[in-house]
Amino acid sequence: MARLRVGVLISGRGSNLQALIDAAADPAYPAEIVTVISNRAEARGLARAAAARIAHVAVADTGRAAFAAAADRALRAAGVELVALAGFMRILDTGFVEAWADRMVNIHPSLLPAFPGLHPQRQALAAGVKFSGCTVHFVRAEVDTGPIVAQAVVPVEDGDDEDRLAARILAAEHRLYPFAIRLYAEKRLRIEGERVFVTGGAAPQLALLNPSEELT
Ligand code: GRF
Image 1 (tube, rainbow, N blue to C red):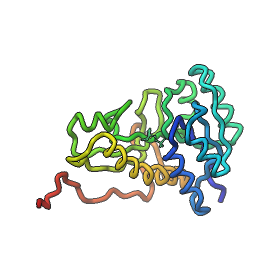
Image 2: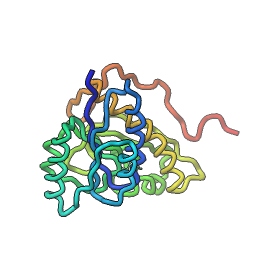
Image 3: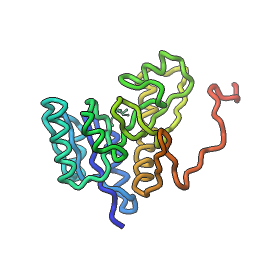
Image 4: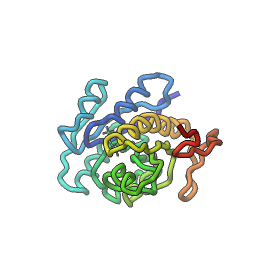
């Protein structure tokens, strides 16, 4: 069967892009990355795309509408069916978001709707939560909102600082994003209002406690 054609928008490091590239290296994975677009020419993710022989382009960021128009052209030219934002740090033009509604996903390093926006790991530590994590969601006009596809829970440890928590959440992101896109590619997702139902998806049964009941 033809694989889902995914276009990835990045701004920087591109480790989530790399996780998607690695997943798609398996021919059995139901999606392929056909193009990578960056709003920053120096984004490290562009080199990752080049190394994987994936078409990639830096689109000059000359304003919200101009960027959206150029990105939209590039995505359509590549026959993209799903847009994946992966560390894309620019607010997108509303028309672009509406044009790709239900065909554009984002990954955010918190359990949304907690801690949207910048520095979610810092926000989590400041709030004193015992769990944070990451969220893949469909993109809506308001930043870090939209129907949630999947989340991964990451416990906050007493010794965490922002970098340590971010690294642990990032490892979860690298599992979650390829999984969520696989669910989309397999047409398992049904959006009803704010909720996304996953065909064949089951919730884990156990609650997690942090601290664990196993005291030392
Ligand atoms: C990730 O934490 C992602 O959730 C957030 O920005 C970071 C991007 O990292 N939106 P990378 O560029 O994928 O390495």
